[in-house]
Amino acid sequence: MYLLDFGTCLLLLEGGSQAVAGRLRGQRPSHIAISSMAKAQLLARARGGERVEARLETLRRFLEPVTTLPFDDRCAEEYGQILAVLTSQGEAMAPEDLVNAATARANDAVLITPGTARFSPVAGLRLDDWRESGEPAPQR
Image (cartoon, rainbow, N blue to C red; front, side, top):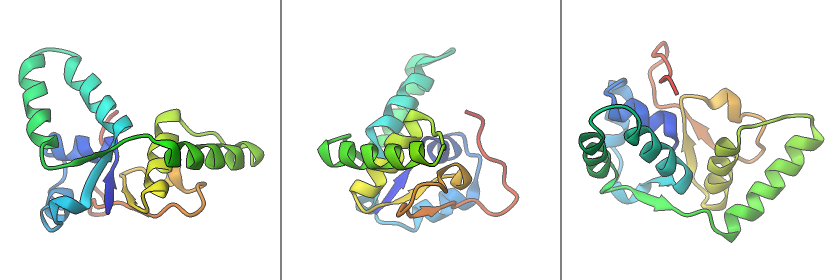
């Protein structure tokens, strides 16, 4: 299973990467998911600015074939383990990134992100960046 993070979803929604869109088209819909955190971030972004209803409708169509993985007890266990290790190493990570990493590990998913470097301190987390080298990361 592949877990798309917020940045990857932005690339897809904004047409910022043909490489990412091509890789996505090559997957079975049942193998694609997002975390409930990424969904919340996307909903917040859609509600910001102008044309809220149109943006929400675009997001609804985008999310329709995608599974949303909840932050459940397995994710909470992974989150706690990751945070404890990072804290002991003097590392910090944004809470939403921790949730995505925990969700990926709990569901044995590969986290698809244009920001693999910020997840590199997380042991046992499988990462991939579907952009072609040289493509810019989306603006958060």
